[in-house]
Length: 485
Image 1: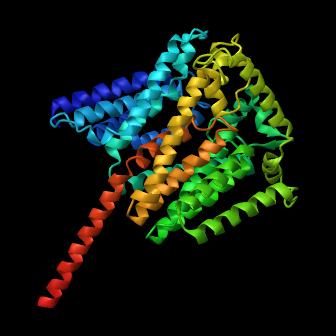
Image 2 (image 1 turned 120 degrees about the vertical axis):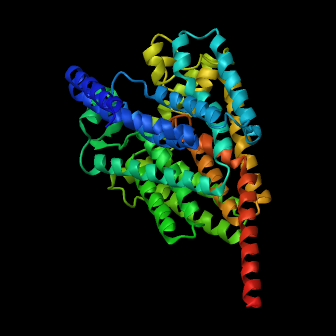
Image 3 (image 1 turned 180 degrees about the vertical axis):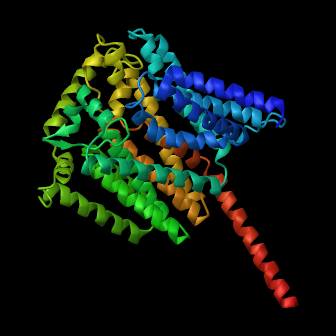
């Protein structure tokens, strides 16, 4: 062995010994993780799309990891990942000029406009804390970063299938963790999280509202309902039996995860999402059958007492009660906000409502009035101007995505995939009225990627048609050769 290698090994050994002697177990873990981090960064610069795929996993896992690792803002980890992904893209295509044409879409412009309004909110005269404005950056930053990356990287049906596959895998992991909490018990970190004040909303009548490794039960329930709606539709167009079974399992587990979360508002995801899908099908038989199915579920929850002995069904059923005490409290809070915001068209400032406000601006009026809903949160922080802009963007995306599915996409498989994303997004939009769902991880990451994919559906349609033409040419060549022989 060459002397330089011997010296290198000795240096690594000495440094490792010093790190372990000073930091003990933590030091050992750092030494194990560092080579993996270096290997990941190496491959990230070779294949920048890896960063975007990793963001899906981070969306599911980061907030859960925050319960185990103190002192680290997990949101910053996702910020850093996305920034490094942009840098990796630049260096990966350093010799060749980066073609930004795929990112020049209306969805990118909408993300930019929304981000500009977010920046404008920095000078909102109602702002009490500028620090909390930065803490609320996810409202616009992630859309601005994820949308162009998705447009640049996910440009074929093969890459789109990987997106769906990763989504399904992490959804299964989320439900699996939820099942552990439901049938066994929460672990030490989760128990500590409950003890910090979250038990009041997550343990009702002695029954745990399952939250898995997400921010809360509301996000877990809505996201699993979202994953289930998309997965069951995607399962229809899977050619391979294994993949069809996989997505059916994802759907069933997702629906079950939604139920054990005890989140009443989450039930609107499958109701609204599947209703949207049946409309997009433009098939009278499917439309009638679908609405009969949805009506049956509605009647089950609204007008029967079947399964009332089950805590999860009982809680879901309460979502259909207009006199529910929780609903009345929310309406009362909205009346307070309406009075406060009457003279504040730009709201009370980014981050000044919800959980972050109680930490950074505890004396602000909005920090003492629960927002409870994503739209109410936007309204409270960004005023009627911000809420109007936000809703216009969301409905523009859903309407254009629906138009593409119904009238422009020619390939039936691509049509169904896009319909799944439109239906899922519509379901989340409906659920966001009752819970702060849309802007929280992992739903936000999935939604922003879906927005970009839906509004670039022509790319996947052209890719599918090109593959069909290649297959037809290959078949003709085979027939010609057979005839000559």
